[in-house]
Length: 169
Image (tube, rainbow, N blue to C red; front, top):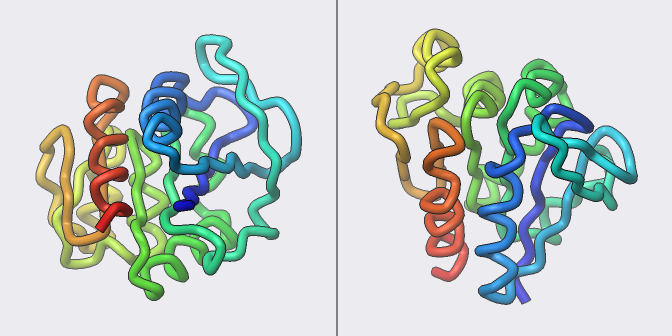
C-alpha cells in the first residue's frame, strides 16, 4: 500500500487544503499519515480537526511515497524549521513526490528543491520563490517532475489528483 505523509501545522492550517487531498488519496487506497510538531488534535483555520500521529523528527522518508506540506497561516512555523526543510530535501533526493499547497510553497523554496524549477505559491510567497531561484509561474497548479505546487484552497482537489497520479507511477 502506498503511503503519504502530510506536514500540517498544529493550528490555522487551511482546512480544505488538508481534507480534500486527504479524502481523495484515501478513496484511492493510499494511506495518509498526518505529522506535525505535536501529537494529537490539530485545528484548522475554520475549525476542521485533524489528528497528528507522528512528529516531524520521527518521519523516515523510506516509509513514504510522498511528502505534502499543507498551507494556511500556520504553515509559517515550518518556513525556517530545519527538520521540515531537510525532509523536503531527503524526499527529493530519493526521487519521491514532494508537494506543497498555498503559502507552504515557501518551505520548498527555502529547502532549495525549487531552484531552477517551475513552481507556484499563494501570492504572498511569490517573492521568496523568486529569491530562492524558482521559476515562479503564478499558475494555480504546477507539476515539475515529482514536484507539485499549488497556489491555494480553490485548487485543493486538483492538487490531490496530481499527488495521486504522481505516486501511482
